[in-house]
Amino acid sequence: MKHLICMLLQLRVFHLIILFAFCLLNPLQQALAAGVRQAEPMTADALLPQNRIIGYYGNFHSARMGVLGEYPPDQMLRMLKDEMRKWSLADPDTPTIPAIEYIAVVAQKDPGKDGRYRARMSDSEIQKAIALAEQVNGLVILDVQVGLSDLESELPQLKRYLKMPNVMLAIDPEFSMPAGKKPGKVIGTVDATDVNFAIRYLAQIVRENNLPPKILVVHRFTQRMVTNHDEIHLVPEVQVVMDMDGWGPQTLKKDSYRAYIAAEPVQYTGIKLFYKNDLKNNSAGLLTPEQIMKLDPVPMFILFQ
Image (cartoon, rainbow, N blue to C red; front, side, top):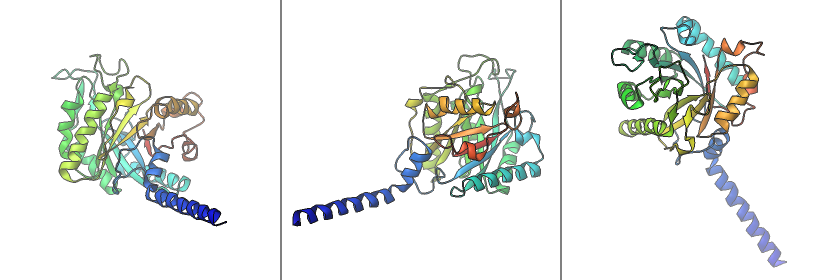
């Protein structure tokens, strides 16, 4: 009997230790539920996965490139807040953070003076995006389409903005043309080496300026758009979101998410919704927050174009 009581007491202590450890690791458990891999140690001021980012995408010079250039600023911000309300109702336990994803480096059909097939937006245009985000206490995500340039050349041009605590980075492999072809003729690609450069660049900015962790968004909708995903190296200073960037009917978007995002995990995941293109070809409509919540892993980044 004494032996049995001793065993029960030991088992009870073991259970308490496990429970205590679970409580200590709860942020990590959240991360594993929302993403796949996690750089340790997590910092308390990291935005993910405690929050979900809801963003609007585009360029002020083009109505075809997304919401930012299609609607007047006041109307666009009202629409963004409405999408945030939908997500708050669908997932009340996860706060939403608004974001303005502005294409700061735009791939071009013409080579330009330096033959790089990209145009850098002016400081005044980037400041406009920052001012819009400030109106909703949101993030700015500077999107880079390198064309025939490269991240090593483009990111230093944005460093003054990336030093700001609320300014993040996105890279768009669709318009990254390492083989030298013109953007828009074929789908581009980036390798893990490119993503790792962006991670290291952001991490250095975070360390040098004592900033909260940055977010790096990588857009993709085919397998070849991001090669060697398993060689992407995570660091505590940068949270990486792999965003399913393809448009089409709901079934295609779900299949693409499973094939190119869930099947090739990095850290956190996202999905882009297209107000117009997702409605083509007798579509059933945009994916709803409730439908997106059923994806595995559940996206913590939702972008609208």
